[in-house]
Image (tube, rainbow, N blue to C red; front, side, top):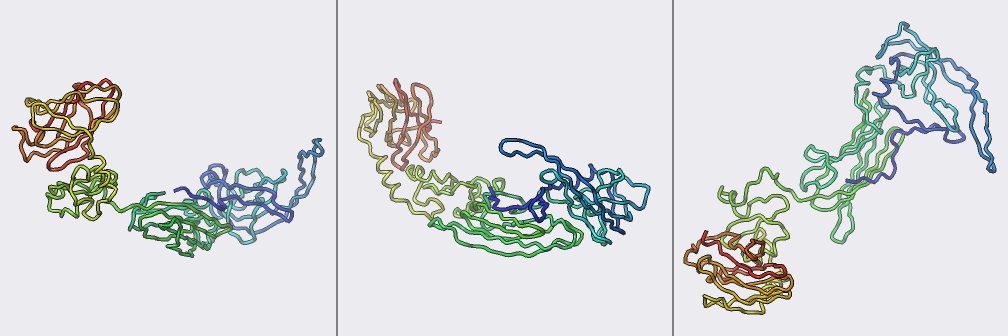
Length: 466
């Protein structure tokens, strides 16, 4: 599924003042922070001291096409914390007390600005990039509730980008082609950046496409949840059982310091048994399964031959199978034969020429397309075949109606009960080629054979002798 992200705040924290935005800060991941820090520890702030630093900021400006350097002097106020160390999580230091300087990030147009800050009595997990006397902690350092174990908090999974959205069906994350009548789970997770049971509101709406092409609301739910104490991530889940069709989905979440809106489309297909679980239709019938309860693999449909044998075929093969005379009880015996297929059958059956087959009393109907002429036809008793000679100036096709009494069951060596779908072989100039059997009845079979220019001979051989 392709999601359309309308609005998303994913971990970009704006540093603002009265005059506007000074900078953007992209937090590091917990693993990166731990690796980059010289020491990591948990401690309690026992004193706060306000310090002033004289800073200088140099940047270029361009006025009327002239560039000049601006030197700006300013005073920066930062908090300095006295911290009683509770536990070192990386690289323990000798002292039980340490002073830490408030974190800063780069600003616009080059100033450093403070971010966050803590209060007297706060319990804090400090990431310290470098112990250098200044001891400025990383801006990702956070307040940790007294009941939370620091090591457990560090080991908890965090969500990269702050949030994630997924759809599951039968325990598998999917993006499209869901299965009808099976539950879909919509799972939204947000890193709340707080361990204090922050609220998360999740709203989801689903619309289904109608026959007119419009989308009507079929599902809507508002979910309120919280992150658990001492856990970063809040999770909201919704469940929906779809039918076959096209759907539009929209979600909106609000929690922590921002909101996110997703949109996307997905398709739901018919339920199908796993391919591995399906045996051939004839084996299903012989095992005692009723013929109208036989299961086909996905994208295949059940059709019943004249003699009552089941087959699984592609949906777009229905017309061809009907024209081949596979019986009136087709497609699970529930779909009527479309009128246009009957008309097409009559059109294909229209053969405008007749030729005598030497060596027999038969005359057969045929049609030839392309600049070609049938010059002769003969029946070979030895090979149970009809041999047709051509004068083919261009490529084309031969459609020929063959009575079963000529080339099929009429042969002395042909068992009348013999049945085989590919009961002919066709050779063009002694090379076997593909052909199409377009009409099959109890009395005749009609073949369509394509040929190339300069073709001299088409031989149609019955498999009855095999």
